[in-house]
Image (cartoon, rainbow, N blue to C red):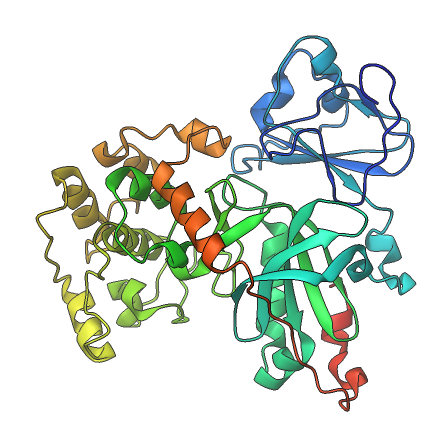
Length: 413
């Protein structure tokens, strides 16, 4: 409830408070029915006026520093938002209404797909067996992002294991400035979906038709490794929603070669195994491309083998348009020796580089850092040119959908 004792109702997965992800609850709320999921930064829990959240928070010393966000649930008869009445402005707290369907009721044959209007899907991005777009919640004006997979396409391509791994990785990553909150996962007889608490705008690659200026590239770089697997939300922030090639590492090296050739590190193309330094190499390629509009190693005019050879040798030249700070950063990120590559000992060495001197890292994490005008204007232009884009899966009506519902799809999706 808000000051003035108004009774309000919220649709499932609707944000409570302001329209922006940065705007928290606007008053005191008492949960009369249902469930509310609250996400906030760990340091916010120390605030003197957030008593309703402290009582539900159990600190985990092992995960405290590695988790940029924590999630709490408020059940019926509980309350939150009292800090507003006490005069404290807390903007980095997100509250979302959650429906009754949970892990214990997934087998009730009630499909969560019924909660979104699939006919309103606005196509944004597609992969070989899935698509990503905006959906409108039924009886609501709220837009959320839905990533859905065609079971038929997944089965035809033999990618059941890959899609399940991506789903599990997406659910297990803590929400952050560049990773949206997973509201729920669900499946029906033809499709499986992941509902995300973000309003996406377009792929990053779609606005890189010409080089970016330094401030715009600098804004995107902290959260980026490849423009083809990254999205921009409608405010202009990078959102990572494609984890097809992601893998959780615990110190071991990975040997699977995947991703775009131009972004592969020397240790990857040479088959020596790779770890986190390979991502820092990809960041160097990404910054070069954003500033120049061309890849540092090879181009579409050259063969893949020629590109591999240049990557292995670290052969690179810089145009005169690059500032000295950008040249220094990219050179250190594109070090062929992964042990001396910038970032190999941790992200602080990259974040403290002079090229990032104007970046407010805490502001980025809290979505308070202003988005450069060039980014927002390009998003607006792209949205205007693609406003009618739609896509739907075409599944043969004669196909027996029971064949698609193997146990891997139904268990714990």
